[in-house]
Length: 120
Length: 185
Image (cartoon, rainbow over all chains, first blue to last red; front, side, top):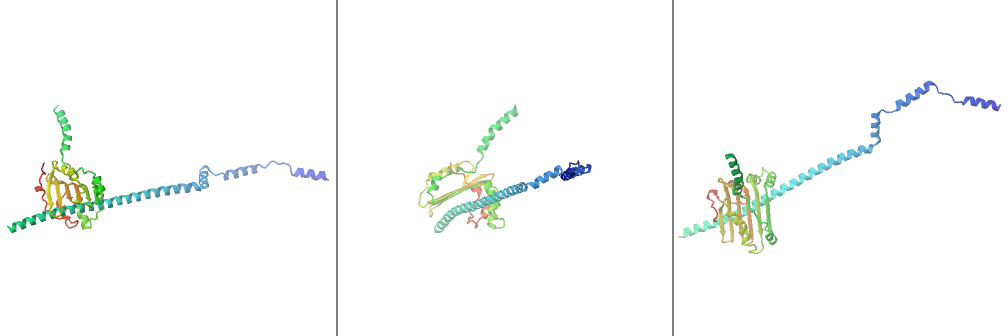
């Protein structure tokens, strides 16, 4: 009895070669799931979001640095310009002060000469 | 052959002519010893670049700025040294003479020489003329407690300088460049 069951089970569980359609379907399925070469690169990019962030932040940093540099340069130029303007004003003030001194001396001299002329 | 001689003469004479050309820029000493003794000092050195920059920062709509801008046109430099001391005779006559001697060079003409008995101030104004156009101005003012040197280089329009009258306190001196005298040698 037991021998009978055993032989039945052996017969049921014996290795059977797959059908031709099965192999074909399996190969077709695997091929359709495999991504093309370009897709694989996109996939790689998707796989490294940090790289994208790194590039974006690097570009932003460069732009910020250029902006700050230009702003500082503009600020320096403005400071130099205002300083030069102040110096021009100061130079003209000193010059005018001394011209005034000469003018006063010339005027007092001519006044005294006129007074002497009147007294004579 | 003639061409060669002409070229040789030209090459030899060009530096000589350049040296002979009047230079209105004075070699002002550093006066570092005076600056240390002074209670107040003004050192202004404005070369063509700085003058151009300053002109850009002058507002043409403002009358004083507009007049200053007009004066600056054609100028190549403004150099001012002024030292104020807290006691009389703090500087030597030799300090002034170092600059005054340069004004004996050809091209410089003394325009005004004043001495005030009241303030004991001496002011000498020199002008350098080139084809009846002032190309340089030098002013030396020596007072008991103050010593000032002003050197303006470039095409100075005295009429424009007169226009500053009242704005910086510039007086109308009735300066006539044609009456300028060559300094005694």
